[in-house]
Length: 141
Image (tube, rainbow, N blue to C red; front, top):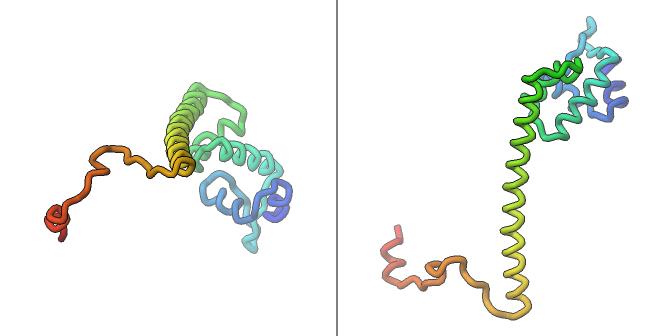
């Protein structure tokens, strides 16, 4: 099938399909005039690629894993790699949760300031210390 049909059947843009080829995730035969022609199996391959992208994997990782995933041949190496990717995502999720918690604290502080009309408190006492004119001159370039 040609690139347009593959795009239509998979819901992927032709640009994305060309990108998948550049990343060695997908291959196409070329006609004498240079047009791409894909095997019927490309439809399922695209679905797997999209699922792995949705799981947060990079194109490099997908390229490494796709042969095993497409062939349905789980290996200890494949399982270790998938578990490592999951662990990476878990660390990222924990980092995002900490960031969200800090933002929640900032929002709570700002809400309190809005409600009471009192100025925001600095995080550190030294942040609130006034800077003397002499110190300003000494730090100037």
